[in-house]
Length: 242
Image (cartoon, rainbow, N blue to C red; front, side):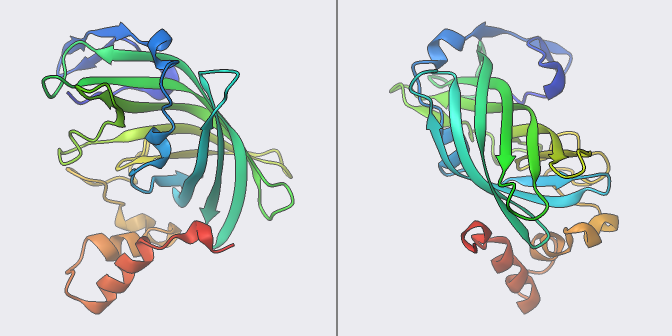
């Protein structure tokens, strides 16, 4: 069961392969769970872009904590990176809707999604900072023992995606805004940046906008030293640098 939807429209009736996916509301129940693991535990580093030329954008959630006074809100601390500019940020993720799917990929596993809004404030004392805001969709699963988990059941399938964040970055200084989207495995509304079929593949024409190392790391012969070097760079914990 692979769900496709436009995040900004928040469609609850989703069409896939010409058939409507039936869902059951889960907002009341989601309040009883701590869903912070969706964004911090054993998740891949997101792929993202900012601006018209799909400049590569990095984001890492260092800490996500459930608001003890609002079970649908989470406090977020993390860092962003564009080129070599690393900025810290704080903000919130707010869940507005949740549902489970009446049909699932695996028996005895409940699958569902949380949908909502986010607003992150980069440190204004740092260089080139602003506000990130928009909407998101994250997929979860609940196993037969009632444990809440990140839904990676279909991670090996073509077109798999999770944690889809879609919005804008707004400069503190100029007040100008740029489209800024990110996600796990795929990026929402990525236009012709993503030329991959089964998996994300940045188009060669955007190599100079931060994607050259990614292309080198994952689309060339892994036995070559330069490819291994590129892969090591992709795996760097860049958010620990400052």
